[in-house]
Length: 479
Image (cartoon, rainbow, N blue to C red):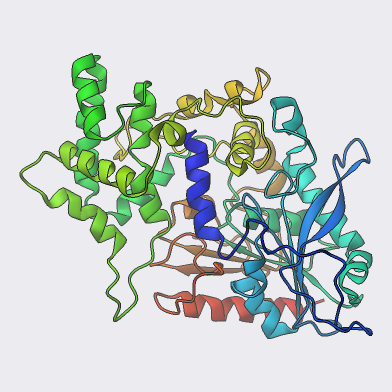
C-alpha cells in the first residue's frame, strides 16, 4: 500500500521518543500538588470521553491525552496540539516548538490524539462502514468539545485548575496545522490564537504543483525528467520483455501493475526534498540533495539507468518491501486497528485528495505520466467499499474555510519554501497582515520549526522561532 509507505515516512519525521505505549503508566498514580506525595510522569496518558459522532449519537470513545503543566502559571495560556495523522507522542511535552512556547509564556501544553490514529479509536475495526466517523467536521468538534470540558478533565486527572483567564492556542504541523487554522476560524470564542506550521489550507485533489517545488530544489531535475520520459516511452511500447527488464533493474520486479511500478519511482526524491535540512556547519553529515543527485553524475549510463541504480539501492538499504509499500491494493482487506496509513488514505479518498500527480505539458515532469490523480484514487473502493469513489468534494472545504485566503485572525503561518506543501499553504500572500503573521524560511522544508527532534538553530530556523514567539506573545496580549 503506497499510502502506508508515505504515512510511515511522515510519521518517522514527526515523532521522536517512544510512542509505542511502552512508557504508559496507570492514570491513578500520585501527584505532587494538593497533598500528593509523588511526582507523576509527563509520559502518563489520560483518556478523555470523546463523542463518537457529534452530529448523531451521543455515545463516546476513549481519546488519548497527554499533559504537561510544569511551566503553567494561573492565567497562562493553554497550548493544544492535536497530533493529526500521527499517533500522539509525549516527546512533544518536553521538546518541539509548542513546548518552547509554553515554557516561555507560563503555559500548559496538552496533546490530544486525533480520532482513528494511535490508540484513539471509536470503532472495533477499520472496515469501510466503520470509517464514517472520520470526518473533518467531527475532528474539529473533538477539539471544541475537549476545550469546553477541559477544566474538569484536567482537574480530575492531574489535580490542576485551569484558570478562566487562560487563553487557548491551537498548534500543529502539516495536517494538524490545518486543523489549528480551521479550529481558530470555526471556534473563535474558544480558541484565542493559532500557530500553524506547514499547513495545507488549500485542498487540492490534483496536486501537480508538488513536483514543481521538487524540481526547483534538485539540481539534477533535468536528468530525472529525461529518465522519466524514456521510461514512459518504454511503458507506452507495451513490450513486456523490455518493461520487465527495467522493473528488475529498479528492484521492483515484484510489482505486477505497471502503473504501480511507475508510481514507486518518486518515493526517494519526494522524501529527500520534503524533509530536507542542509548539513550543519562543521558537520561531516552528507547533503541529502547532493547525495541523491550524485547518482546522476555517472555519464557512462543513461539517466534512466542511474535512476534505476539509485532506486534499487534505496529499496535495499531501507529494507523496503516493494509490494506492501507500493502496490495499490496491498492491505485493502486488512481491517485491523492501528493502521495510521489506512486512516490517512480514507481521509484523502473522502475529503482531501492531495494526489501528487504528474504535471501536464509543458510543465516539467519528475514522475511518470501514468501517475495521475485518477490512478491514485482508484484503490479507494477496494479499501473502503463502492460508496467511496476517491473523488472527494474538496470544494466544500475550500468554500467553508477559504482555501489560501482564510478569514481568520491571530494565526501564525510558518512555512519552509523548500517544502512542496508550501504551495498549498499561506506562504506567499498573507490574507490580512494586520491580523495574522506569516513567517517563511527559504532554505527550510516541512515542519522544521515544529519538530521535537530538531534542535538546529541555523538556516533561518532560529529567526523563525524567535518571530513565532514574538507573534504569540503579541496575540496573547490582545483581547
